[in-house]
Structures are given as structure tokens and as C-alpha cells.
Length: 169
Image (cartoon, rainbow, N blue to C red; front, side, top):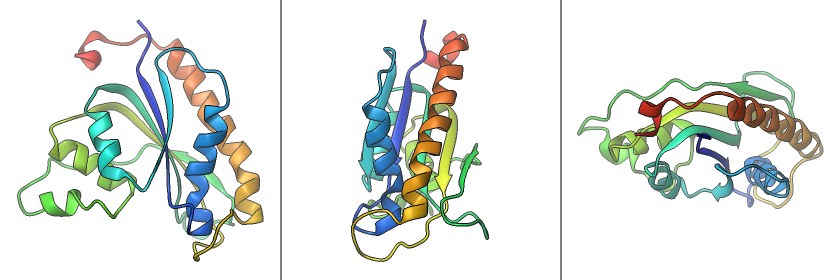
């Protein structure tokens, strides 16, 4: 049984480098993938992404522009984010903020909806600018190929791992 995998490009193309995840998702979608792998541009639709994840996925890969300390613009990193604790009544509204798109907000919203996902990875890129405007800066545009390579390696590896039945239930 092959795993269900979702690769979600997130970001706002109207704020320059914030569109990194969207551009990477479009590039990845042009490649050929086995059944069970979905590549999607979610832009700033975090709630929509959380509802999609309620359909059951073994692996989620989020591709996004994000501040990575003092790294140079265009630096790409791969990490597993901390999982949010179960939502409580005081934080439920915060988790459901439809105008905020970050890995933690998506995962918090998913938990609030009663859903879950197997493994989660984030492929992040240090932006140079998130000012209003269209198009990625030069170093971030050059980093898209590296992100595509990292995601491709993750997907190749995930397709080789057996899927445990309880993950799919």
C-alpha cells in the first residue's frame, strides 16, 4: 500500500519572496509523481489546507518562505516542526485565523478540527524581501531548484517506506 502524501506550497505571491512556496509547488507539479502524491499551491488558504488534511495523509511537506535566523537570503532548510498541543477553548479562535498562514497555524487548525497527519516536514527558505510586489528576489528564485531537489528526495524516500495500517485508519 502506498502512502498518501501532500506537498503544500504556501505563501503570498503579492509579497515578493513570500511566494517561494507557491513557485516551488508549481515547479514540483510539473514533474511526474506516483499515485498517492498530491502537489498543491495553497497560497494563503490555511483553513482550506487544514480541511484537506482531515482527509487523511501519511506525510505532509510544507514549502514556505520563513525567517531562518541570520542565514543569507536563499538559504533552504529542512526540518520537522514541533507539533502543537491539543487546542483548548481559549486558543481555538487563534488557531482558526483564516488570514494567518504558518505551519503551526495549519497544524493547530487541523488539531482543532479533530484531524491528524503522519509525519510533517517543512522546507523553508530565508527571504530577502517580503515587501509588496511580484516576483522572487534573485537569491530566493535561485533557491527554488534546491527546494525541488529536497522535496523530491523526501518523496522518493517516503515511497520506499512501508505504510503502517494504523496510520491510514
